[in-house]
Amino acid sequence: MAEKKQAVTMDKIVNLCKNRGFVFPGSEIYGGFANTWDFGPVGVELKNNVKRAWWKKFVQETTDTFGVDAAILMNPRVWEASGHVASFGDPKMDCKNCKQRFRADTLIEAHSKGEVAAEAMTDAEMESYIEEHDVKCPHCGVRNWTPIRKFNPMFVTSRGTLEEGSDKVYLRPETCQGEYVNFLNVQRTARAKVPFAIAQIGKSFRNEITPGNFLFRTVEFEQMELQKFCREDEAMSIYEEFKKKALEFVESLGLKSENLRFHDHDKLAHYAKAACDIQYNFPMGWQELNGVHHRGVWDLSRHQEYSGKTMLYIDPFTNEKFVPNVIEYSIGADRLMLALLCAAYDEEILDAEKNDVRTVLHFHPAIAPYKACVLPLQKNLSEKADEVYRKLAKKFAVTYDVTGSIGKRYRRQDEIGTPYCITVDFDTLNDDTVTVRDRDTMQQIRLKIAELCSYIEKSLEF
Ligand code: ATP
Image (cartoon, rainbow, N blue to C red; front, side):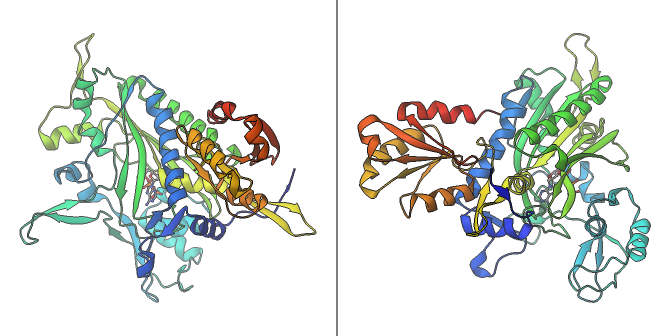
């Protein structure tokens, strides 16, 4: 077994992502556009696989969860009902020295490496923590802060052909409102009985004061989340069940249990009954990966009040009418992708004397961008290799590489986490067998072409 080299750093992940086609800085040729990222050919495969894996676990494999894909632009009244227009405010502080703006809670969390839960603090407590612990501006290194002020991170745009007189609309800061407003539409058309859930994967937008750490906190990101509608007396056990399922899911994709922990919220929103994050030990410290929240009847009641439409569920057995409780489970696709990249990244010393180090991403095959790479040993075997490629491409995302030595080609695939390299050589022409090289063990076996699909398929289960 090869020896491990060094700890993963965010710089290494960012560089690998840029150089291997996972993620490029947004609008790069114009000097970039801070905290926006474009997913490249390998990155889009990885992200799609992460989303597919989530949908498979939380929608496809259940009998009581139904999907929606709601509009990003919603009636502005939705955001009044949700409380975002009036009170969705982050605690911002400006550095008087360099004029940069930061979120007080993220400054504290970064300073304490995730050990201090700033969300439980009042503004005054955060200000005194920052003073007592001499928390300096990460940009210029000086401590000269303004007092905390609230900042609404919703992006505003306008609807209509003329800007004057047109209505203000918002880019949604969370996807879940699309489920709440469709609660009865889905319940009726799916003939769903409480408890049931509505799930969605989609883009959200937040004008974050302190974005950063690559994909961790961006202004445009994708959320994968579901809202489970239930009776009050079963809500707490459903909440506990989702904490467990959320943890099992990320472990099954390759995050190690020692790098995961529950973090119960000390301070709850006035309507919430319980809230818990799962935190991951990212290179910059422990940070939220996902949230599970017991939201009581707040969301549906507010929409009932603001829309004037009933949100009452009628129990088909007892005829009892009630507004269901909501358990929410939400995880960012980009943030999970970052955690999976950090967990998979490895530098293995193969030969210390020759300074032979291989960079490898040990992705679970289910999320690996490509399941296999087909390599003709020499160019004149391309026709046969092409035949193998086409056969596999009907089932999986696969890639093809004909340039450079076989060793170099293996290393290129290791760096993007391709689990299998399939080499077509001269024996293939006679016996229809190929060499299959395993990314993690670097062992090679000989397989019949006819057996390749089922061999790869087996590894995709999780
Ligand atoms: P944070 O405390 O990190 O700002 P939050 O508690 O506001 O997150 P939620 O509103 O519960 O987050 O969103 C659910 C999930 O969406 C988060 O757990 C995270 O995975 C993801 N997420 C939230 N904000 C961002 C962002 N700006 N960039 C990337 N992912 C995000």
